[in-house]
Image (spheres, rainbow, N blue to C red):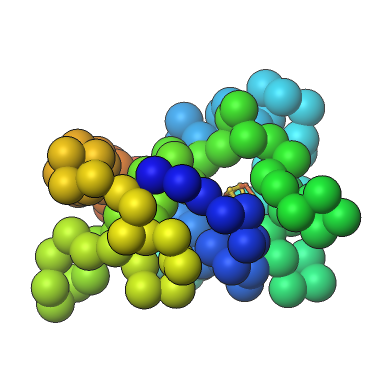
Length: 126
Ligand code: SF4
């Protein structure tokens, strides 16, 4: 797909993180407390700073950790709508440039990723 770098998807992000996502960014030198929020259900989520993901470079309008960005950011704008299933996020202005094949492939990844994230959150609660 063709991303326009509008930055909307990195604004007030609610992106969930897997253990692997966290480990990759910690390996890169970031402390977990800098970029991770844990909610009461044990889910890890990217932190925001002044309205944007902590990793969003506002001056350059790009992700500052692009090579190591979380899995959810990689499959975006494909997301899971609890009521509808796999959909393209409506806030993404270039969502229609994604091919059907890419949507299907990323949709499978989203399902797997969310199952893993659910399991990891359950482990934290136990
Ligand atoms: S990690 Fe990068 S791509 Fe993901 S929300 Fe943050 S700035 Fe955007």
